[in-house]
Amino acid sequence: MEIRDLNLWYDETHALKGVNFDLYRSEILAFIGPSGCGKSTALKCLNRMHDDTRGVRIEGTIVMDDSDIYSARIDPPLHRRRFGWVAQKPNPFPSSIWENVAYGPRIHGLVRSRAEMKTHVEDCLRRAHLWDEVKDDLHKKNGTDLSGGQQQRLCIARALSTQPDVLLMDEPTGSIDPVATAKIEELLLSLRRDHSIVVVTHSMMEARRIADRVAYFHLGELLELGPTERLFTAAQNEKARAFILGKFG
Ligand SMILES: Nc1ncnc2c1ncn2[C@@H]1O[C@H](COP(=O)(O)OP(=O)(O)OP(=O)(O)O)[C@@H](O)[C@H]1O
Ligand SMILES: [Mg+2]
Image (cartoon, protein in one colour):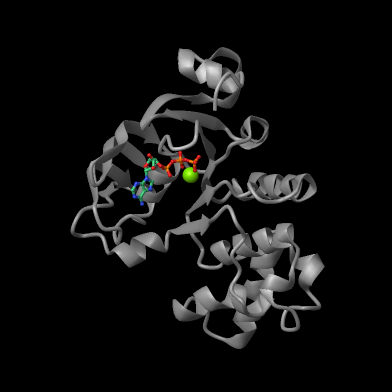
């Protein structure tokens, strides 16, 4: 994806100011920066999540596979299906583990038979590193009965179930404990092979462990973007350097 000169206003609030970046295949790109600097706002532009929000105005271009995603030729629901979304707080449906993963593929007609669905659900749960822990409870337990970390991996399985190209994750480890966080991080690294992943994180250590590249946002501007190690050891921008050193945030 190519994001060029992206500006976004919430009514009078200028929340994104001339943001430029590319998102490559099979990479993990981390968004870091202080609270309120536009990380979530930028993430939501990629899958047109702002479409239904009153008062939002967007300028600039976002190109995905040679098409402008805001052009009239793009069907927003089809566009959105190319993305999986994972929120900070795990939000499984209050239904069985099976149903959490089977729902999306069923309503979008992605599988043709019960047998195919069975294989697909298992595959998604395996890819989310959750299968072994839930395989005997698929119909017995609700998604909401799982631990926080398991719920988040179920939400990732659900995000994978509609076969997205890109995963958008807004602080996916922000509300779970360190052991569960380590599992999610390992999972993200394994998903990178087949997906582009954009992850917002408040943990510098997490960004350093998992990201290929890091983007530093500040008051709506993307001030610096580069390979992870370069950003953490030799950021060019003074504010990025200070933030990484923990001088503000
Ligand atoms: N729905 C909205 N309506 C009006 N203003 C909003 C809305 N969502 C965000 N904003 C404003 O846009 C700016 C950027 O917010 P955003 O949520 O993108 O920041 P963030 O970097 O994700 O912060 P955090 O790290 O706290 O999640 C902030 O000034 C915020 O108050
Ligand atoms: Mg946010």
